[in-house]
Length: 215
Image (cartoon, rainbow, N blue to C red; front, side):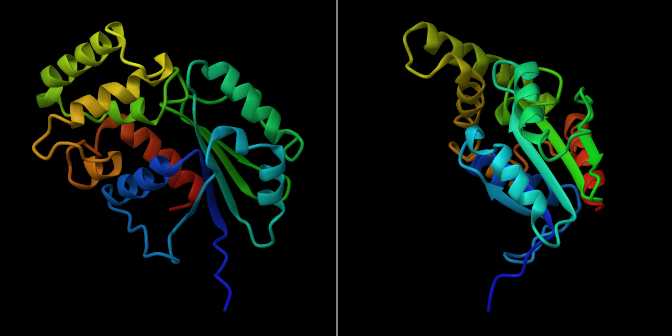
């Protein structure tokens, strides 16, 4: 018996997104569903370059599709990333808006499909998933977080080999290494409430997600 097709679908860059998003949604009171019965099916596209016009076209043409979302990282240049993903969408969605709203894009296609784009961290600045999750660090942890950022930057100054564009990853993993249980993964930091899933920044994302998928 074939796997049941989920008409609500989400394309993401990698496994961290795939794991983090369900935890964040559940921590805000929405049951994600067991495997095979998720409220939204998340597809790990294994890197931004794979979220191209061909994939978007294929997804939009799938029989039964009702909702399609895309979550990607801004990385170093939000404007360039938006133009890139917009260009990938244009062959399938000719009337996609020119500007990305700061609250995330939600657009109904000519075929009645609800389509959305969110660019991490907040549709406003450069960064990535880890930048967004750093917003969720609790106020009482701020001094340790500030120190973790300084340590990660100093490590880079001393020759640590990670790419400059990965500095936000280095910062949050440094901070996670100093928690009660060191070394938790990003999704575990949400699951076990190391991060504050009710933070206002998380609520902006959650509102976009709920509105896109009619939750």
